Length: 240
Image (tube, rainbow, N blue to C red):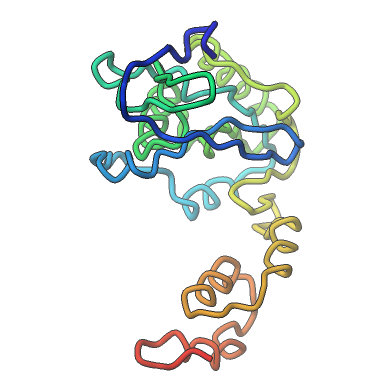
């Protein structure tokens, strides 16, 4: 990152710690723990695509493509005077990031704004951004080829790149935000369901609420089944 200009040496006395997060493909993702800095950052109110809206639009399509963007945040440059604030510390010294780093409070909103500009005119029509993936969705295959070409032209003109090993084209279903979407409807992804089944017994009301809220809309008679548990979430009730 130092050689390609993503980071540079810093003399800032304040710096955030570094974290290495293991990815599903057994590689490691370099992250900075910006929690203390994020407390002081003003929230960017630019709207992020809601899960409900994403699923609604995707549910109307028959053919899908998903293209994983490589380091999309790095296409957004941090103002010179602001760079010292995102400094991080390693055994090799203190560095600051020249581009928008993953983990800042405003990075997702900034990225959404950038991608909405890139996809202007086709967003909600046949393309949307899902985290750092661009999803193309259409109702027939003839439209699919044109939409895919349009998306790639826009990505190339914006100097963005995609990771070929994480791209899929021409499928009749797509995975997005823990759901599998196809012409048949929306279903929870098996991997996410397994994670829910493996959750430990909730010991607090907060844990209970988190464990049962994600996929409840897929459970028939959910309110009746969880009536006793829901009572525990009411203020004043003792959790046991």
